[in-house]
Structure formats: C-alpha cells, structure tokens
Amino acid sequence: MIDWFLDTFGGVGQRVLHGVRRLGYATRFFLLTLAKSGTSFARFGLVVKEIYSAGVLSLVIILVSGLFVGMVLGFQGYNTLARYGSESALGVLVALSLVRELGPVVSALLFAGRAGSAMTAEIGLMKATEQLVAMDMMAVDPVARVVAPRLWGGILSMPLLSAMFSAVGVFGGYLVGVVLIGVDEGSFWSQMQAAVDFREDIVNGVIKSIVFGIAVTAIAVFEGYDAPPTAEGVSRATTRTVVTSSLVILGLDFIMTAFMFRG
Amino acid sequence: MSPLVELTDVAFAYGERPVLSGINMAIARGKVVAIMGGSGSGKTTLLRLIGGQLRPQAGQVKVADRVVSELRSRDLYRFRRRLGMLLQFGALFTDLSVFDNVAFPLREHTRLPESLIRDLVLMKLHAVGLRGARQLMPAELSGGMARRVALARAVALDPMLILYDEPFTGLDPISLAVIGNLIRRLNDALGATSIVVTHDVHESLAIVDDIYFVSEGRVVAHGTAAQMSDSELPFVRQFVHGEMDGPVPFQYTAPPYGEDLRLGRP
Image (cartoon, rainbow over all chains, first blue to last red; front, side):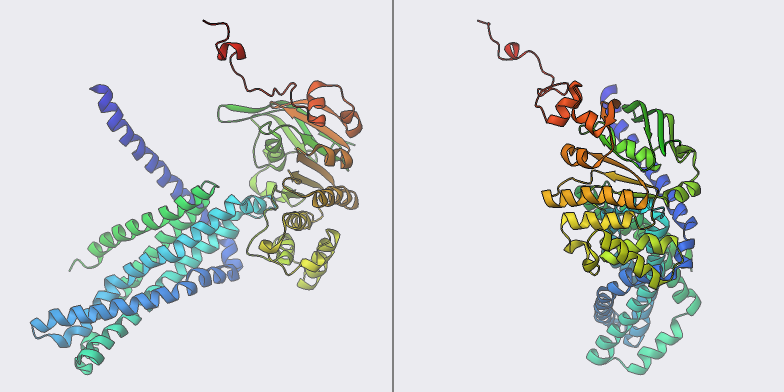
C-alpha cells in the first residue's frame, strides 16, 4: 500500500519539482538575455532583421485570419443584435471584441505557431549543428548575438501585428455588416467611435499584446537554446513552444482581463 | 621558451563518469601536434579544456602562461580572440554566404572598413583555394569545401593557437589530403601552433610534429611522428597499424565462450 502510494505520488512530486526547476532556469535565462541586450540596441540592424523574420513574414497569416475573424463576428453579431433590434451597434460589438480580446489573443496564438516555432527550430538547429559553439569559440556571445535580437524582434513585432489584426478585423466586420447585410454605415462607425475608449479598450489591448509578445518570444528562444542537440530534441522543443505559449497566453489573458475590465 | 599549451595533472569527469585523469602535456610554440585515441577516450574533452569550454576538476590548463580555467568571462573571450577552432563538420553559419562566414569574426571584433575586410576575406579564401566560391551558401558546398571555408574563418584573425576537432571525418581522399596540407601550411605561414584531435593515422603522421596517444583518459604514449610510427608499444602498434585485437580487445567483455555455448555439458 505504501509502495503504491509512493510510486503514484512520488512521480507527481518529481514532475512538479522538475517543472519548478525548469521555470527557474527559464527565468534566469530570460534575465540573462535582457542583461545582454546591449548589442541588440547598439547594432539595431540585428533586431530589424528579426522583426522582418518574426513580424513581416507573419503578416499574411495575421491579416487573412483577422479579416475572416472580423467577417465571422459581423455575421454572428448581426444575428444576435437583430433579435433585440440593435443592429446599429454592430460596429461597437465588432470593435470591442477585437481590440479587447480577439486581436491580442488570436494574433498571439498565430504568432506562437508561425514565428515562435520558427525561432525555436532555428536556434535549436544552430545548437545541433554546433553553430552556437563555433560562435562562442570565436569570442562572440551567442546569447547576445543570436538570442537577444530575436527576443526584441518578437517583442516589438507582436503589438504591431495585433493592431493590424484588429484593424483588418474591423474592416471584415464592416464588409459583412454594412456592405453585405446593409447595416447603416453612419451608425456602424459613429457608435463604434463613441463606445470604444482609447485608454480603457485600446491601450489595455496593446498592453495585453506586449505581454503576450514577451511571453511567446521568451518561451520560444528558451526552448530553442535548451533543446537537446538532436533532430528529436529540436522537434520536441518546437512542439513545446507552441503548446506552452498557447496555454500561457490564455492564462495570462484571463488574469489581465480580470484586472483590466473589473467594471 | 615555455610551451604555448601546458596541461598539468588534469582530471575531468562528466558527473560521476571520469573521462580524464592525470593528463600531462606540453605543446611547444610553432608545432603541429596530434591527439589520437579511440572513440570516447577523452580527446575532444581535452580540446574543450584547452579552449576554456570546460573547467578541469583537478590540475591546470595553461595557454600562453595563463591558466584558462581561472579566466573570467571577459578575459576568456579576449583569450579566444587569439584562438581559432575548426569544429568537426565546419559549423558554418547557414544563413550567411561563404564570404560573410569568413568576414564574421573580422566584423565582430574589429572596426576595419568594409573595403579592407573584403581584401582580407579574399586573401583567406585564396589561401584555402575557394576565392571563387565566395558568393555560395553553405548548403551549396561539399563536405571538403565547407571544411576549407571553416578553416579560412578559423584563421581570419591570425590566431596564435588553432584547434582542430576531427578535421578529416567523412572526407574523400583528395579533400583529406587538401585539409591535411592546409593545416600544416597555414600553421607555418601564420607562425601559429596547432592541435589536431583525430583518428586518421596516415594523414596525421604525414603532417604533424608530435603525437599524444590517449586511452581510457590517460596519455599512454607521446613522441614524434617518426617515433610513434615505429613504436613497439602494444597500444600504439594496434592503433597505427589498425590491428583487430590487442590492448583494445576485439571481443566485448563476455563469459568464457565454451561456457556460453554450454560445451561439455550433458
């Protein structure tokens, strides 16, 4: 009986300890990367290159997804609002849903799948092919030269992608609501303008996207740097980046929403 | 003159598993020295100790009269600027062209104008016979060419010490001879010192001055290439002549053969 108990719960305890250790290690790595970010700002071209890789190359998936999410919101929103004779508030519904929630969250989830996984795979493969060792032996710090620019590239890209997601989403809602269904264009835009508060809604949405950007990129670079230098190790690290980032985004979103929109 | 690289009673273990113990070496300036031994004998670990990637648990590794394991991070990087290293498969940066790979250390560590960097890179590439391949990407190179580009990159800053980790692995005979010749010629032209960790006996005997044989974490033999070639020491003989059985047994430890086949039992 005691053996069974130890076998069952001992394993759980070990997993928890491993998780806590790994969290501590990841936090130390994140702080180390921040401390070694001087090169990234002294040679900002390195960060610009990463903004291109993480941000510009993610534009297509972000814009297309934003458009479709906005169009679906247009349909669903109109359907619900029409029951109460409030179709004219469609613009408010679309805009608030996007800038408060869907813009930051969905763009961060897409960013984790597109850019986060690519970052992990790239750094992991650099490690597996000894490129990071070669750099270290050339007296070039791989954390300062490879990891920090990617971290800052991701952090700077995320809020911009999220803003573009929301803007295109609002346009998608307009296409469906105004152009396709025939909601009054004046009330669509004027009610949106009156109801969306810059400080309460837009700034809070931007703060969310910045936090998501830090979380996703920090997870992606850590997983890449920590990946075992084998094909299987890199593949598992890439999967972990997407899964962990997605869960962290949703968890952080709940916490931030609870604090930001308490009413 | 004091040796450039000096190891005194060096011991190292990965966790509980001892890899090196009581290692003593003295590598004179200007020499090309090979460290040979079977897989898992601790050769690459030795190279990592000399490069400061690992710290010994006992003993001292001195390069140019400085104890490598006592260098602080900034001093270690300053020391590595005078060090070139060729890793097993070249480890070229796959997102950079051949030219940019060789220019990398120059751009990172000097403030030379781009026109001068261009000339220096072309000189290094010319020395390894690949000036015409400057615009190619690493994926477009053969194994031998990648190794030559990595060699040009390793000597870009004219190092005092060049470390080679298995430079001959997986090369065809022509590439193998080319890399061997380049190791010797570049060492002499730069007035550097080279340490080559390798299994390749015949290529090494042709280009190196001295050889250290390492087995089970200890130096088992040391001498000039000619002495080692004619050595009657059982381990050296087996290694140099590729004999199947000897101090390194052909059979993995097992119960007596007859007993395993149950001979003599009813």
